[in-house]
Length: 249
Image 1: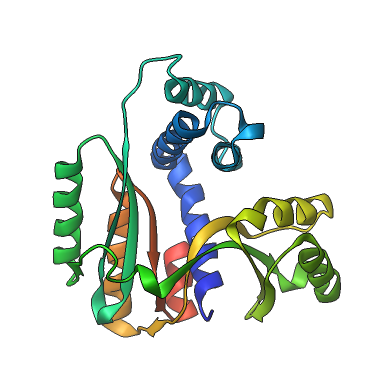
Image 2 (image 1 turned 90 degrees about the vertical axis):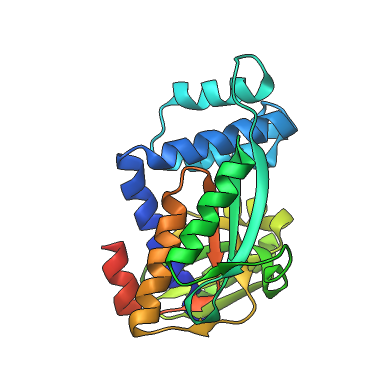
């Protein structure tokens, strides 16, 4: 899992910056609306909505925005109907890339995504071309300096986590997706500070990148994430920490 927690932490720092300019609000609003449309407007009975609302609160989205997004999903307010699509492709160095989008115009979005890949020296692939390289997992990261290893492992495994590993400055906990909320709650109840907590796509193998290819790959990911229709980008690169730190600074 080399490099994954460093990238996950960098993404969360970037999300905080995006929140300041409102971009992350747009993406979370879409997620809340779709989650409410598919599973109802009560977060207690809709795990996907509960996760989206928690993410909204973590970036200080106003409560009125959250409420309106839910009401658009349930039909109480008029709203746009979004389609969920997954695109796959390859970045510089043969890095596998998965992009989750929500769009009200499939033709516009696929054209934009293909153009972004092309400009970055990558290419879009067929459905399923890289998905087999990833596993969907609950993913939680705690800083090694802020928590006792034995205590954390006991809490995590007792709550249903699959594994815990030390990775550089962090402890990385993985869970089955359906156990994520339970493990997260157990850690939060024990006042364990978490750097990252999310359900994500974890690569099975990694492609090491340095120099120009590393810079190209990070530009590709950043350009994809800046697209309003893109919700999440997953990739199996392993890039030196000093380059990631510069991006997250």
